[in-house]
Amino acid sequence: MIEKTTSALVNHDVEVITISTGAGTAVLTNLGARLLELHLPDRNGKLADIVLQRPSLADLVDDDTYMGSTAGRCANRIRGGELRIDGTDHQLSLNEGSHHLHGGTHGFDQQIWAVTSDGADAEVTFSRVSPGGEEGYPGVLTTDVTYRFDGASLSIQIRATTDASTVVNIVNHSYFNLAGHESGDVLGHLLQVHGSYYTPVDAELLPTGEIRAVAGTPYDFREPTAIGARIHDVVNAAAGRVSSGDVGYDHNWVLAGTGMREVVRVSDPGSGRTMTLSADQPGVQIYTGGYLADVSAKAPAGKYAAFAGFTLETQTFPDAVHHSHFPQRVLHPGETYLHRMRFDFTTA
Image (tube, rainbow, N blue to C red):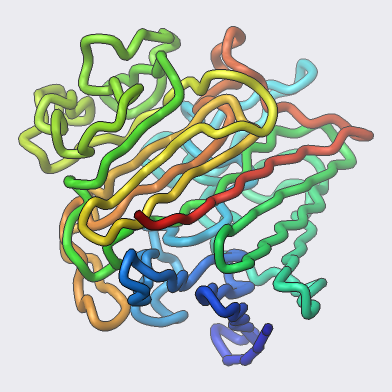
């Protein structure tokens, strides 16, 4: 069943769409083509909302946590906001110091999307036409984001086309806590990443260009390992020192295989919930919410603590435009950008 409500916000009508099944509920909004809530049962059948979110729609305006949003048109960081495409230089907006992050100051997360499909088949599609020059990007980009929820899985498909060559890397930026969004930190969650390499970053959290093996490092999650097991050994690159646990992970893993395949598995021993992510992208940015302390939260949390949730942003590699050996993300006219992800939920 799909229900829709409309609220007035910043001179726009913002829609909130609820998909209910016998097994759970997903709540979406066209503000940022965003996931607001995801209610799923634990091993005892008790429902909990497992995605973090701000208290109200108004709190999402100019929000810098990107909670639940569709981030783009090019998510993650681009050094200096500088692009060269087909021999032409482009300057993007700078919204993280001297760099470009998640599509700019008014990226996809801050836009009101059209709801083009919300049929009775538990599927909702958000659509948007991004004009040429928006945030400095060349080309008119037409994007559709389709969510489908059946109670046991949440699927997200992103498609985009352009009328001029541009860069595209559109991600879902939901934060998860499988014990319930208000339950505390996720350091005890067991994380498994199907990838033997990661891309180290410099002091400004931009890739150095190296692709390094995870073996013998705090980034080795090839076997299920508690997120907090080695988090104190993660290099806090922004401060140039070893983290004391206040920053944690915000890194890109190089995923094994190609095409649609299982890439990450996370489980919460306390609730019995397991989330398995399948995707068709070459990398995943895992951020463990080190900067979430005191961020205002939807009820009943009030405020979140550091490490209250984690993101699984399947993607091409950050700043790929400046590293020719990274998988590239330039989209040309006549081509279709496609990004598929599926979150499967089980209990044990």
